[in-house]
Every structure is written in structure tokens, then in C-alpha cells.
Image (cartoon, rainbow over all chains, first blue to last red):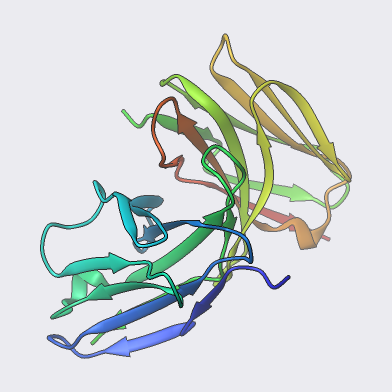
Length: 113
Length: 109
């Protein structure tokens, strides 16, 4: 049972481009969480999804950011028209149920140039 | 004031020393997590606890729900323990984790 898989590990985008970050949860896990870690700051919650549903997106910026977790395939965090301030490490975590331990991926480090 | 506070922010130790990292929180929680992050690396979940004490190898985590405080102890520290240790809480009736800013530990041989 592979752990939470995120790809790419590193992503470089020019300002104005789109960034797509992928997260494959652990087998049997239907809950996915995205967190962002800005340079020299702590982790912050972005969004919580279950299969085909966004449960809580209270931590997502109102514009340019979206997330999905389709019935088939990985969860995708999409950032449109990236800006320098989007440069951060984006971590995905998955769990089998609410209120159980979440397992984290290796993160995607996004650099906007 | 952050809802999750960790101390110290930075910690340096000699190999073999006993290490304690503290976490205080101000919200009601269903669980508290201790996480480890190596530089440039992913995040590993060390413990999830809601009461008492848990032990895994040289790591021990304790929590006092009444005092809203948790500690992570490392016995016989080793240079490979060098990492950032992050405390996070699961508040009641929410689905998100709230994180402390982390404690950066360096263990020298």
C-alpha cells in the first residue's frame, strides 16, 4: 500500500501560467485535505474533499484556486494565473474517515518566476 | 495570538540528550497530532492522541486535556532526529487541522 503520492515534487511556473498539483490518496482513503506552507510560515488548511464533493473550502483563496477529487483519479489542486505569492509547498493528506489519523504526501514545491 | 503555540521555536542539543518540545492550544479539540518534517521533505505523522500518553521507540507524547497542553519527548537524541516538529490540533466539529509554527531541532554528534 503506497503512501500518499503527490506529483510533481517540484513545479516551476511563470507568472500568469496555470499550476496543477496532483494527489493520489492512500488506498481505501476517501478523505483528502490540501494544506499550504508559505516560506518560513506554518501550514495552513486550504480545502477538504471527499470523492466528488468539496466539504470545506474555507481556507481557499476566493479567486484563482480550485480543487476537485473526481470519482476516478487523483485529487487536483489548480491555481490559475499564478503570482509570485503562490510560491509555497503544497501538501496533501488523506485519511479513511473523519477524525482519524491523516497521512501526508511529500508535497509539491511550487516556484513562480 | 495563535490558537496553537509551540516552544521553543529552535532547539539545539548534543547527541544523547533528552529533549522536550511543548505545545499549548486554546480551542477545544478532539485530537492532537505531532508531525515531523525534514528540510525539503515531506511530513510524517508521529502521533495522534486525545488523552494520556503514547510511546513509539524513543518518542513519547503526552497530553493534558484540562490544561490544553501537550509535550513531545525524545530520549537518547540522535543527529537523525534533526527536523522540524509540528504540533497540530483537530478542533471539535471541524474537519481541518490547525498547526503550530513548528520547533526546529538540531542534534549535534
